[in-house]
Structure formats: structure tokens, C-alpha cells
Length: 252
View (cartoon, rainbow, N blue to C red):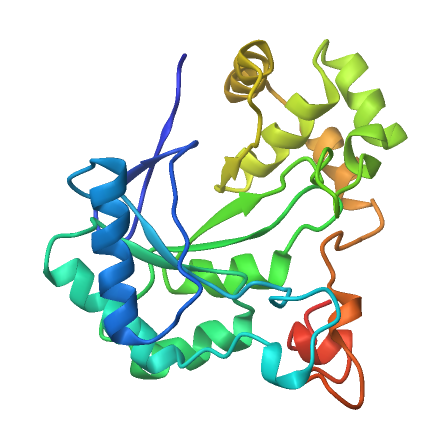
């Protein structure tokens, strides 16, 4: 299947679909050991990209304050930079970072993140964040570019939206192809979850789909809706996040 590449600020090229791993710990030593362990288990010599992920959830369904994942960002990023120096990965990046957190990281980072992977789709367009990342040559990679249908927290609202359906009919395409083409048109890579080979092949058709200015204007009129919000994490007693705005740094 054809798969376009995205060139990152470190010179590495990244395909639209990749393989990842995740460590729940966040200190420098554990960051390095987690990557070593993942490479060993996957029998892989080097990762193309490793991300520091701010997960919008906690370890348990009804978390207490001490059950929230704590992140020592400076130490964790130091560990990431060390892994880059050791040749364990070709590039390092972040996920779910707001504009505020990007600026915080850049205040002490000696290596600028190559990627910020965030929720992004036609109904959550991330214009401000894309601008901030663009100013620092940080590539924005869109997860849930279709709105996360099939996930417990996801929705079919994006691909079922009448505007997306109408554009798809006009372009003789599928609604997922239209949503993916929109994301690609913003210079972003799109990370699609599917275990169905025919659906994967269908998704890749989006690389060749053409949308015009009117299509983009119609999509820009859609109501903004962040699907993976994390409301249940916010309260005035046990949570470090008092509101959804606090959780997402007023970028929701």
C-alpha cells in the first residue's frame, strides 16, 4: 500500500502508521529501561519515534488524588534525550501536550520534540495548537482522526455528520476518507486504528483524495467538540484537576 512520509524537524521521515509502546513510569532511569525492554521484547533494533504521553485518564476508574499519574517532565525529557543520544530511537516527541505545556517543555529542553500527537479531526481542529507547534517546527500527528469510533470513549459523530457525509457523496469517497484527507491537508499525519485489511486499504485512498476550498470552508463551520474529554477526572476534592479547563490548560 502507498504510504506517504512526513519529514520531522530532526530530519527523520515518519510514515502515517507506526508501532508504539508505553511505560507507566515517568522518571529518567525508567524511561531508558522501558525503551531497552520494549526493543528487546519486539526484537527490534531501534524505534523510529518515542513519545512522552500525558494520558487524560488515571490508573483506576474513580481515582483518588494519589492515584493520578504524576509526571516529572524535566527528568522524563532528560531520559528521552539520553535515549536519543544512545541511538535507541531516531526521534522523540510528546502526546496530549497543550500549547502551554509545549512552551513549558521548550523552556528547558535541549532537544525540541519532533512530534506532538493529539486528538484531531474535523470536529476538533486544534488550530491554536497547530500554530504553536508550527512556529517551533513540531509536527502534529492526529490520533482518533475519525473521532474514535469503536473505542469505549469514541463516537461516530465525525463520520456520521451530514456535512462529512455530503462531501463524501460529492467526491465519490467514504466519510472516513474525507475526515482523513482533511487532517492530511493540515500537514498532519493521521493515526488510524484498524485490524481490517480492506478498511486499511480504503483509508489509504485518502492520500489521493482531493477536496476543494468549499469543502474546507464547510468543515471549518462544524461545531467544535473534543471527544476524549476526561470529565470524570475533575472534581474539587480528590483531583489535581478542578475543571476540564484545568485539565486541558484552557484549550477546550
